[in-house]
Image (tube, rainbow, N blue to C red):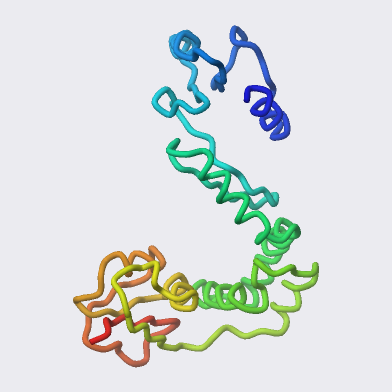
Length: 227
């Protein structure tokens, strides 16, 4: 296990040193870790101990890397095996070119500001594109972002309705979850669970009302419970 951790750290660019060398963090993988951990913590090091979350000052997530995109899957030390299993399931879904796609979006910030000067309009346009022609889970060619900026328009003001069949947010459809993630505001009835509303964008307005007002800008998502 120690050699496996060494290889992972070296691949990430870490410099591996011995126990007595100056350092800030330490990873411990041995049969009797308590004495080693005590010595390291006495020197002020933060310690991670394989399979001993009770001794850890920090945990290491499983990583899916598509530089500059990093997806980290952690369990707070509950189960490294679960994190690894989730990584193995997620890894094949992430295109190899996702990092280059992220770089293309970063390079296009100026062009996007020129195309959509209003910040809210720009965010809605990008959100719609990432749910459609610029789907990040689909391989994109190097000119995809440029073509999108040149040819697309921001989506118009609209209201999308979600009628809940369950109080469990995991029962939301992918489309409903996407609407909530992109919403400028969420209108809802009093009986809509907080767990559902928590799936909306953190900065989306929440409006408790009997029906969504007309004429609101951007995307309004109206949530009600099935009767």
